[in-house]
Image (cartoon, rainbow, N blue to C red; front, side, top):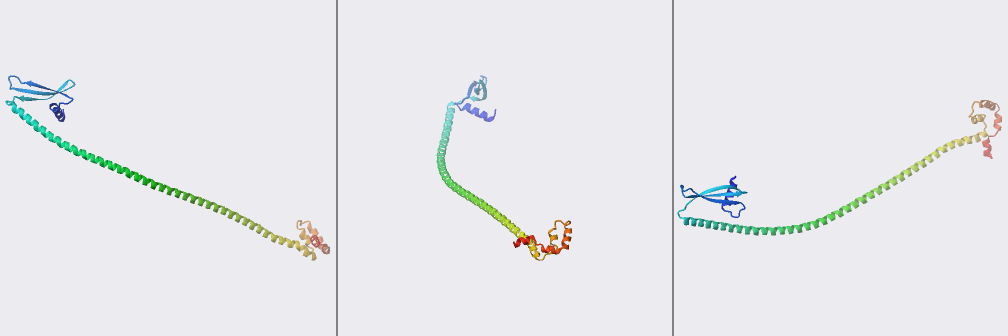
Amino acid sequence: MQKEKYVQDLRQALTDTNSSVTYSFSLTPSPPNCSSTITLAYEKVQKDISFRLGSVSLNVVPEPAEAVRGLLTHSLERGNTLERHNQALDEENQRLRQEQQRITAELKRYAAGKEALEAELYSRFVLVLNEKKAKIRSLQETVTDLQEARSSEGKKKGNSGKLDQTADQEEAAEEDEYGGSTDEEPGEEQTNPALAQPTQDSFTPSPLDDSLNDITDVAPCRKRRLRHLGAPEAEVKRPHPQTSQKKR
């Protein structure tokens, strides 16, 4: 058994009367041949098993009244000491109780102030949050407006670009048509002298006209040219069909 446990059990056995553990005490007289002493034994009883805690030899006191007086005096002094100690403990407990009450009141006051401060801060936070939300909404609306404006400008630019492209294509087509017409005019001018040449040459007939007009078939026309060269005067007297039509 440990020393602390033994001291606790011994103290409970000798002083505590309201313990749940049962203790037994026994006085055993000494044999007649020995001195007049008595043995005091104390045991701890637990579940029908007794553990002997110790024993003390008691001698006979020649003056028991003095011994009793000493015991009583010691008991009174010890009682007074314990009473003063209890009074000091009561005063300390009272002081601690007052301190506890003061701390409790301070805590309640701090809790009330904390709740009021939290409510105020929450209300301010709500106001700031609403302002921030309003700013964010306005910024989002501005961004959407800018995006829509940019998209509309892009569409307008795309449409204008398409219109410019179509206009350029139309101008290019017109220029092509104009260029084709101007290219055709010299051809016509070139063909007109060819058409007008027989009119001028009709007044000055040449024996080579038939050979120039009959350029498609060269081989059969050689005999013709020879015949025409043999009779140039007949060719001169015969008028050209185109000149006759123009005169009409």
